[in-house]
Length: 340
Image 1 (tube, one colour):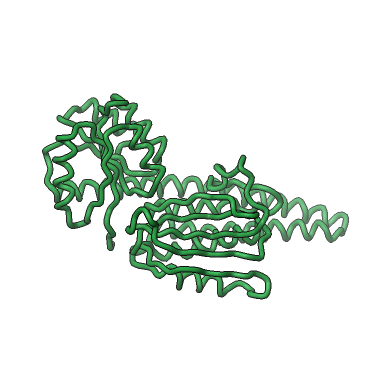
Image 2: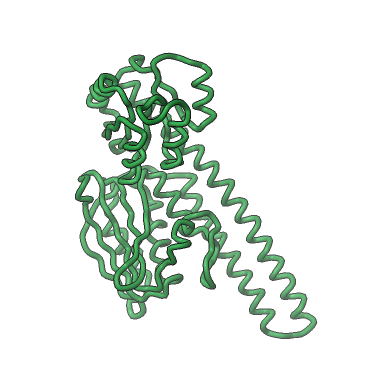
């Protein structure tokens, strides 16, 4: 698999330890490590809100947090990032506690070089990705079983009533159940891209979006695209764009979608992709829920998998997504992803 630079957050409270680790990180080549250094839990949690990372390297003893609680509080901010605990010595009890709390690896400071450090970080990321893929598969299988069984119950009941009453509305109800089941099966094909990732590569974001919007009738939906950029991703990025645009059109009722692509001013290693619509907007009380598995809202709610797929794919890239209000109306989905 091709590998871009890895963005890691390093939380070490002692300056001499931080300097020692920084020296090794500068030497790393395969892959190249790009680190942001902090010396407290508060700073680490703040950094995790500002941009995507691939992994976190942390000491459990920081000036403002002690022990395993440090790992727990970091995970609250970044539950899907690989966590690597840095320690002064081998301590089986601490290792077991950290592993049970969700850490993917445990490194004894001074017992590795730049090559082994990179490999440990890579292995930790791959381990975390596998854990997340297994969780995703379990969640999606649960949704699939539940929703398709419900649909079949509706279909069967509607057909039975139609036999007795010959009322066409019960045939329509049965057909709706069939269509919902078909939509779920189509979403499952997209989920395959999440749990079976392809080779990562440089992708032309402008060209990809042009291909997606070409499928929509231009007399009904007006698209504008500004800017260009290359992202480091795989073909599942197509599903991300399709789901965001479908969500805007189906759920917001917009007939205008504006897309902008630009380097992130604060970090040239990242690009920002913005999808702005002029629809009804997303109520603030559900904004934190729209990426949850199976979440539906309003009459237009369908499988509840579209934005969940978006979030899981982007997590695999180490990318982030957030939602803002558009002015004067509508919503903006913002993706921050590594540049290719």
